[in-house]
Image (cartoon, rainbow, N blue to C red; front, side, top):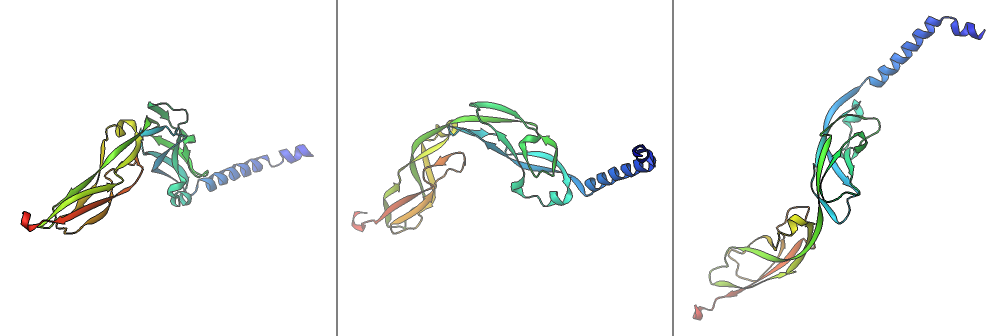
Length: 218
């Protein structure tokens, strides 16, 4: 009886199975799309005494999946993650695979460009340097600058050794004193824009003392 069940209408059963498989593939593949995206590169497990001074900020990948999911992707949902624990100073190379790509599970990575990336790692360096106010312009006629003070007068920098060791003073942003006739206290930003260099303070207070010239001693 069991044999009759298995052998009866065997071609009909086979056709139904093929149709079911085809329908499954149709459902799975319908509405699918493939696109190319530039995604950010993130480094993890970097030892605190080191800093990455040169590595690609982004790579290009091809992904395939449901068009609706791809269309609704948010920036923080997809990135390339490289674990660099145990890395040494100098240049290193990493070959990326699908395991390095963080993205929703329903999407598939079909290509990575470039597949191999290089990183330059340097030791961190801390250094104390002087702050120099960048004053431009002249006071009003009949006045002169008596004194310029900066608080704090020094600050600590921390960053890649090759960069920090070349810095001996840090200038403030330009402070235009053209035409002033009274004392001035100015909160000035520091002229260091490289995010790899950390500063102990972001602004300094520049105090400028102005004095009227004594007409009798002109």
